[in-house]
Each structure stands twice: as structure tokens, then as C-alpha cells.
Length: 207
Image (cartoon, rainbow, N blue to C red; front, side, top):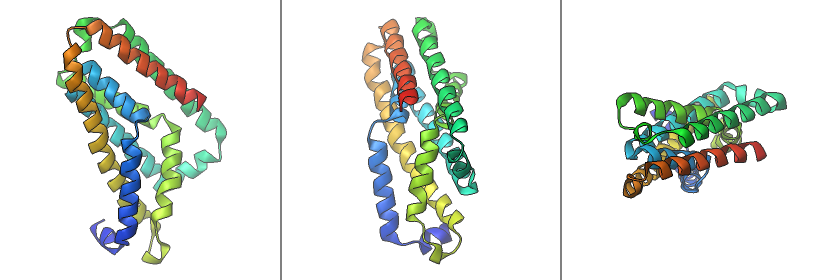
């Protein structure tokens, strides 16, 4: 991967990294999800959710490199199933947060952090828009003249995942930090997280 990185045009790499950073700085589904997890369970939960989201992006990048994403794009039924599945999962998270007690809200243990990671990954994997975006975005910055496109896409994907993890993790951590001011109002934090999760579900279906 290092050889591929060195062979690629530095200006193209900078343009790609800049576009990815601007995209991740714009609050979207992933950022809102990480922030909700951070506000609900603390900074560590927000970072864990961001790490899960990054792993979900790795999944989408792998599909793109293998060409599976292109096949899914040609099958609207599969995309519809994924979209509704993701919306159902977010609604389940919203219901869980809405009915959670104060003791269930705080995410501090290793087991709970793993759960935040798994939720972030599953939310990202079940969002077909991420796969379609990566499918449309990565190939634009590849150059067949440099050799096989797959290694180039993997290199670009690694850059995209790394910058996304840092930015989304920062959003989640900040949400956890400022959420500490409302830590005594556990019921309110649960309800706010539930509203965010529910809103993300509706947005995923409508878009």
C-alpha cells in the first residue's frame, strides 16, 4: 500500500483528503449517531461508536473494490431492503434509549463500549447511501495508468477511513464531554438520544 501511495499523484491525494475531510466535518448520519452515543454514554462511548462507523466504512470500501457495490446499485430491491433494515435498527435503538433507566444509560464498561462499537458499525453497514457514495467517490481519484485500480482504491479508502475516524470520534468525544453537564438528568439525555435515533431512521427512509 505504501508503494501505491508513493506512486499516486500528490495533488490528487490532497484533493481527495480535503474532500473527505470537508465531507466528514459536515454533520450527517454518522456524526449525529456518534454524538448521540457520546451524549448518552460519555466520550468513550462516542469514540467507540465512531470506531464502529469507521469499520462499517471499511466494509463498504471492500465491497466497492470487489465490485459488489456496483451490483447492488443495479438491484434497487436490495438497496430498499438495506435502507428499511437500517431504519428499523435505528428505531429499535430509539425505543431502547427512550425506555432506558438512569442505570442503563451510562456506557462505561468494556462490554458496553463494545456494544457502542457494534451499533456504530451496524448502523453504517445498513446505510446503502454510504456504499453508493464510496462507489461514486473513490474511482474519481484513481489513475489506470499507474496500474491496477484496486490497490489505489484501497489506499484512498484507508485515508478516508482514517480522517473519518478522527473527525467523527472528535464529535462523539465532544458530545460526551459537554453532555457531562447534563449527566444528572439521565432521563432527559435518554429521551434526546431517542429523538436523534428516531430522526435518523426517518431521514434514512425518506432519502
